[in-house]
Length: 376
Ligand SMILES: [Mn+2]
Image (tube, rainbow, N blue to C red):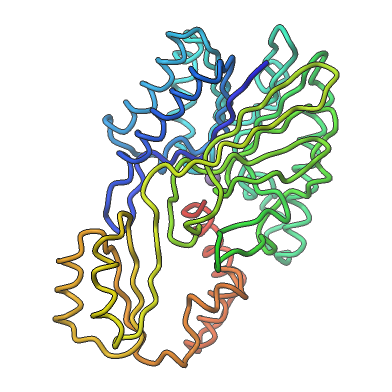
């Protein structure tokens, strides 16, 4: 059986006010082409179809066109909600999707007949995004972050075991939207490992599953060998920090009873590249043409002095330039550099301290909540 595994479309995404949806729609067209040329028999979508709960009808239409194309070809699909998707919205659509042979699960039901969907060849377990706030009860709110992380991992371990016990006979697939501990984030010089977020240890992925189709991390990667678990990566580069060279795209998964799955990564370069340029004020003139010719979206960090007029003019004259920051004192630590050593939470804590403010657990929890709702 040949499956296509995709995730993290983020339809409706804006980057510094620019619409990325046309690039994502183009990538979905490429996926349709792959489904035809690779004789795909089923599609797994591991969450974050949309970038936010409220999206325009136009954006929604692009997702429906993709699924209608599958329906017209008689290809089934299994879909879960990610942290960005409007869960109530997807839950309301699920019965309609079912008419087209598409299973959509927006919430973990803890009901076998809902969470597990049987197929002639086995079963598909669905684990849509589950926030740590729902997993960790209010009575534990006063505990340390470290304890919370442990409670999250334990809770997820129990949920995974519950799904594993009920999967089978035949091939058991799991669709899940969460962060696996040790996943690589970003790319290029911004590559770092997730270490201080809510994450599920790879050992918690039950061996009962033949393939674990993950979503949430935008960098394509395998995170476990037993069971085989992969992130397909986002369709396009969604943020500057993700790295122009980071692998992303889709995965073709070949499943055969009694054999380990064979995964063929499609490392695509769909959408426009995003590049951060870090230039000294004095080299700006000489590099301007290169910046102008770059076909993607740019962020420019200028070290040294730049007049406000010049900055405005550059933003106006270079249509691909989305952001221009001026570092007047390049010797002082820049946020770009610090990010390589610190996670977002530590960075925010440092920022608060520099401002002479107290980093209370409540404030940090609120920051984490806002951050996790926005990122990935
Ligand atoms: Mn996500």
